[in-house]
Structure formats: structure tokens, C-alpha cells
Length: 466
Image (tube, rainbow, N blue to C red; front, side, top):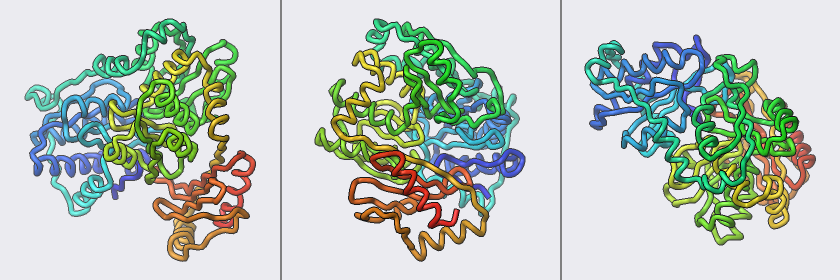
């Protein structure tokens, strides 16, 4: 069974992530493409175990169906692959990656026109085709290259140049920034280092070798996984520490004082910067588990903050519909209008460096400025694994019985858009939802202090019996 979650199809290597499933998925997409007379697809892969091989297997299927494959034959950031889809005017793209999941996982992300994550409607179509059964057709990779059906595709320069054109490199050059980069054994080093060094930053890197076990840590940039980056930023006197996840579409930031800047704060800082300091105009889109501080910032500038379900495809779709300036999520992914329609940790990192140089302020100073204007918001996050039986119990309790916990805070409204979200009268909120990428239930709460948010999260945990 192949089922797409919020960030593509992900499965354990050797269990469900096997050749038989990979080629069936490729065939389902190829059948859709041939029916709609789409003639090309962009395919790339990251540094995970089996990623390059799986990309070849998928390419052989598309070639076997007469579809041209623009094959990025080096370890590529997911946003670069999405940029390739946009640049070539392709209807589809594919990245072999499991993003920030544990090393035992791999997966496939599917992109549609413009370089955006495939919508639920698209992925359900592929799932349905596989369930009915597909007849897999393949062509040997070498033969397909000879026939011009698999075309080596190197768009590094184009992708890097597109970001350099959107960033004020002259302002960065004047500041002589000292940057420490942590690719987390992933694929961002070449692109991000090139961008920053072009802007005359002094760049050092850690965790940049090829390690399919990601150094024994989760390739997800958060406060727990970035302790070495934090320590080295302080010891080396760096202006900023930048980390990207396994496929470089998400970021984690350590400021000059060694503070971890939460993705909620990053998104708020960038939106405020773009509107206040750069004079750009537009609304903002966030998912249902991302800070409401964005709502306050948007309202102060006479703009709207739109709330959508978790999954960047929902953010992309709403941004396109509303022509929003920026969209993002609390897990570290964001994008800006005018770039690709998917999240890009490399572009976001470059923009944060520009922010420091243009404003002459540290990230902590910009954040203090925002808190002075809009008030401080703090989030507490927890997640729990569960058995199949427990999941059934939780689903029944939350979505059939619609039972609500007593949290000791006046409730304004309740939403079941994506999980259970309770909005409080004091502008705080809590959400419990099942992860779309891992067998976990996640609980997020945002309040005026982290202590209060943690207290309410624990009440939800007890209510759910976790």
C-alpha cells in the first residue's frame, strides 16, 4: 500500500520502500502523464541510502513509457529539483528523499507545475491507480540515455543565480558576515556555501560528509540536534549558525548569542522584515500548527493571515490563490512570492543573512522589536508514538465522540480542519493531530509563556491517555 502523507510518500527501507513499490508509483504517474500528453519530468535525489538507485529505477519506468526524464545526476537539494520543474515548464517532478525522517526511511516527493508539492487530489489519483493495478514498462537506463529519453540535467548555476538575484548581495558584502553552516550530512552545502561566499561571507561548515546514518541523529534542525552548531557559533564568534535538514527545504538557526531561533520566530522575523524594512506588500499563509503572531503582524499592516491544514501543498495553493507574500510552517519550511512554490531552506537562509546586514541588527534584536510591538508568544511541542489499537481509540475519542479536555482556559472556538484545534479567548491555542509522515500524534500549544503552554500540553496528554 502506497499512501502519501503531508510531505510525500515515506516508508522504511526494505519494508515498503522497495523496488516493486517505487516502479509501481512511477508507472502510475507515467500513465497519468501519457493520458494528459505531458512529455517530460524532472527527477533528482538526496544523500539517503538507496536514493540514487531508486531515482534510476523510477527514470527507467518513465523512459519505458516514452517520457523524457531530465535527470539531475548529483545529490540535489529538493528546492533545486522544484526549481527545475518550474524552469523547464514541466508538469511533474520527483525527488527521492525522506526529508527529515530517521535514516531507516526513504521516500518520494512529487511536484506539479511551477515547482509545488502535489495536491491531495493528485496523490490520491496515483494511489487509486496503483490499487487497481498498473502494468510496469521499463527501459534500461543506459539505453534510455542513448535514445535521448534520459537527459543529464545540471541546473546548479541557474538555481543559485535565481537566489542571488533575489538577495541584496551588495549589502551583505559590506558586512563581512561570519557564518557557520551545518548541512546535517545532507545536500545544502554546495549551493548555500556558493551563495554566501559570492556575497563575500566567511563560511565554515560542519557535518558535511556523506553519511547515510546522519551521524546517528535525526536530520531535522531543532534545538536538540543543533547543540554542536550552537557551541561552535559561540566558540568561533560567528554572526549566525545555519542548519538545513536532509533535503535542504527546512532550516534551523542559531543566533550570535547561541540561541536557537524557533521556526515560528524565523517566519515572523522574515515577514516583518519584508513588509517593514523592504516595503514589500502581501498577505501571509501559515498552517494550523504555526504561530498566531503572524496574524498580529499581518493585521497591523492591514493584511490577512490565512490558516490552512498541515502540508506545504496547502500553503502553496493558498499563496497562489491569494498572491500572498510569504508562507510557512512551524517545522522550518517557508517560501517567498516570486521564487518556487515550495519551501526552500537555502533561499530562506540567504534572506536571513541579508536581513542582518540590511537592518544592522542581530536576529534577537529584530525579535525583541517584534515582541515590543505585538507581544510575546511561546510554543511547546510534544509527540507520542502509539499502537494501532491506541490510534483507533484516539480517533474515536477526538473525531467521532468529539470529546474535549478541561484545560482551565476559556475556549473561543474549536476546529477539526486538521486534527483537533482549540482556540482560547486569550489568543492562545492547542492542537492535537496525527503526523502525516511518521506514526506519531503531535501536540502543539502556544501561549504567552512556554511554561503555561507546557502545562496545557500535559493536560491534553493526560486527557488522551498518552
